[in-house]
Picture 1 (cartoon, rainbow, N blue to C red):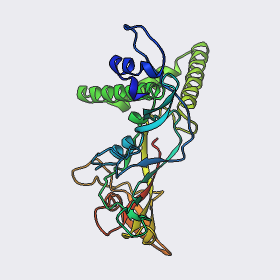
Picture 2: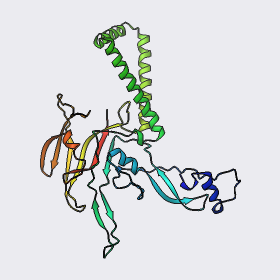
Picture 3: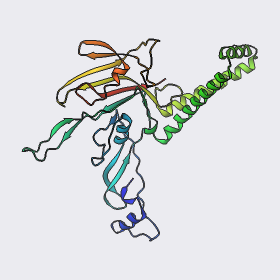
Picture 4: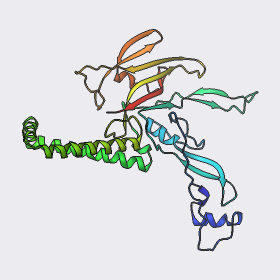
Length: 304
């Protein structure tokens, strides 16, 4: 949207640059919608796509929100000149895997230096992240409507489960009764049931396709962290990179991390040719803030 048409007063003031209008009519530059292909999301740490923005980013979601909005200069058809616009980006199609890059490296101008060449810098600031990444707020309205249906259905199912538990109903006994009743159904009713299930599955597949390809059924917009690439060092041209990967098989006795809802699952850290076991709590400490390894790339997969 064009910032210079945010009010009737601004539009009227710009009329001399554009066209004659009635005093009671405000010029409006219609919003421009376009689609771009992105391979990753960026967690902006220093200041977003707008260099003048001053936002204290402490969490992954704050940095992503910052990178998806900002100011740009582009041509205005009504003003017939360049104007300042507000750019707001939203996800229109979800992938099965999302890569998030932390904007830790940047180019710093050095106007007072002799060569004025500038230097490469690294942002050491800590930026926390979780084992689960919810993309709902970063999606467009169309995707949000589909995700909301799945979320509402899951919430209702959880409420029903809690209600049954409070009433002291035995779910196993209820399941046995349901199976016995199913055996007594005639062939016609069974056929109708199969047709209804087939129609439901077809609708479900169409819904998933509308959100994005390769996503699990009833996807709610939540992704789980399964890999991390970290960088250690203060030099943008040097340092050491390591990989952290979530174990494919997890122990059934995994416990939650203290004071959180995060499960302390098994991970492996790859330091060149050395591989060592670690835990989720070790991975979540890779937020930066010191000379230890800090996350540079986070890999999330659709949560089933």
